[in-house]
Image 1 (cartoon, rainbow, N blue to C red):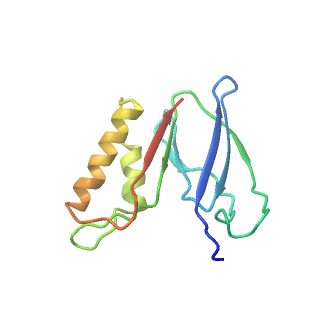
Image 2: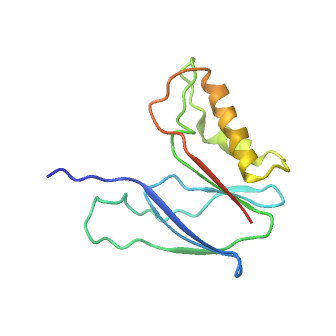
Length: 137
């Protein structure tokens, strides 16, 4: 029987304690944006995708959540979106987009980022899913 695998990010937010605990099974690392506008990837764990090795244990990272920060979770279909010139949207463009000053709430940011990727692709069909989730703290 063939082995199935998938990448997976699982996070638990404790708003009262201001903490995020997460495990990452081979998924692209989410991006954290502070209220000051600093943008960085969450620390990676180096863990394998789910399903590669039975009964593997995954590292859990526990970190503080600062008031006014945003957590941007996405699939690799966003930085790997192509335009007609065969250019990728890319990590640099993604980080720049997230770093821009904005007063928008997560739902409006999702729509803004979705439109940016679609506009960049300019109608070129994409081969991967484009998924985005944003949490504000």
